[in-house]
Length: 459
Figure 1 (cartoon, rainbow, N blue to C red):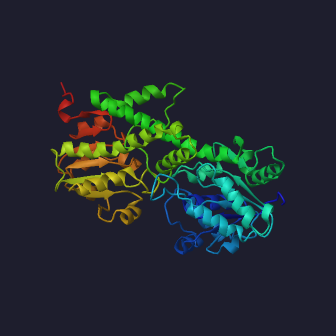
Figure 2 (cartoon, helix red, strand yellow):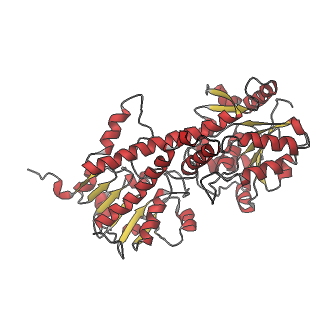
Figure 3 (cartoon, rainbow, N blue to C red):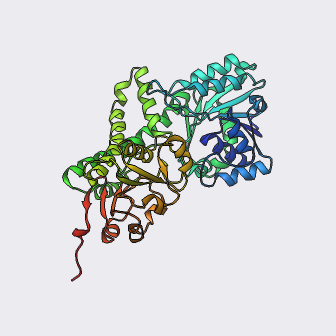
C-alpha cells in the first residue's frame, strides 16, 4: 500500500463524519461521505447541513460546489479510497449502560466487502476498549484483500460549537497503531496517517503514538475526567447551598491554583449532549466486563451528581411557586445542551423543561438554534418564537442554556414581559446585581438567594 493519499472516504456523516469529511476536503483531498440515511445524504449533497455547527456549512458548501466533496448511500462508492475513516455513532444501549456497537460493526463489515486493494481503515468513533481489535479481525476475515487492509485508531476530541477548529487545529493527535508503534507494519500505517494530517502536524500539534487499546482509552478517559471535574464543582455547589456559601467564588479561588485550573469548573446545570453522559456510562460498563469495575466506580457518583443538578433546578422553581407547579407559567430559556449547537441529546435544559411540564406547569421554551430539534424530541412542550413571547406572563424565568443573547438580556425590558420578576440562573451566567437592581429575585445553583429588598438604598 502506497503512502500517497489522494482520496478519502468517511463512513457515517452525522455530526462527527460531516465535520471530518469537510475538513479533509479543506486539506486538499477528494472525499466521499457514505451514510445509510438518504435524507441526510441528500441535504449534504447540495451543500446544506442537517444540523447546526458554526463555520461548517460554508465549508461543506464550498467543497461540494468545487467537486472535492460528495456524498452517497452506496458503500461501493468508497471502494477506491486510499484511507477510510469510520465515523458512525455509538449511542448508549437501550437495555443497559454500555455502548451500542451495532452501527460501527455493520459499517465495518459493509465497507470490508468492497475493499479489493490494500488500504488503511481509521476509526474515529468513541468505542469501548477492545472494539478496535474486534474490527481489525472483521476486516482481515471479510475484505477480499485480507491482511492488505490495516486498521488504526485516531480518536476525535471535538467540542460542539468548535468542531471545525478542533479538527483543523487540534490540541493533540493520537494515533493508535495495530501491534503498537514499533510493529513493522504499523510504521507504514503511521506514514499514511502522517500524510493525511501533514498540514495539521506541520503546525506543531503534539503527536501521541499508542497501540489500539491505549488509543481507545485516551478518548473515554478524557471524557470521564472532564465529566468528573464538572460534577466535582457541582457537588461543591450542593455544599454551598447547604450553608449559604457562593460556589462561583469558590470555583474562582480553585481556578487560581495552576494544579487545578479553571476550565470545566463552571458550576451550574451540568453536562449533557451526545458524548459525556453516554461515554462515562459505557466506560463503567466496559470496565465491569473486563473485571476492572472498581477502578471507575466513582463515575456512578459523577453521573448522579450531574443528574441531581437538574432535579435541583426543578426544586428551586417549585420553591419560588410556593410548592406547586400546577397551572403556573414558567419560561425556560434554552433547549440545546450547550450554546453554539442545536443538539438536544440528553440536554439538561430540555430535561428540566419536560419535568416542569409533566409536573403541571405551563412551560414555554425558547432557543436560538435548537427549536426544531427540541420539538422533535419533546413535542408536548410549547415553543416560543422569541424571548419576549416565552417570558410573557411567566412567574419564573429559568436560564437553562448560556447563550450569549441570554447573558445580554436587559432585565428592565424583560421585566415588562413577566408576571413575577423571578429568575433562576441555572448556568450562573448572569450578573446578579444587574437583575436584583432591576427588581428581580435572583436564584442560582450553589449561591445564596438575592432579593431586591437586600439592595442598599441611596443615601
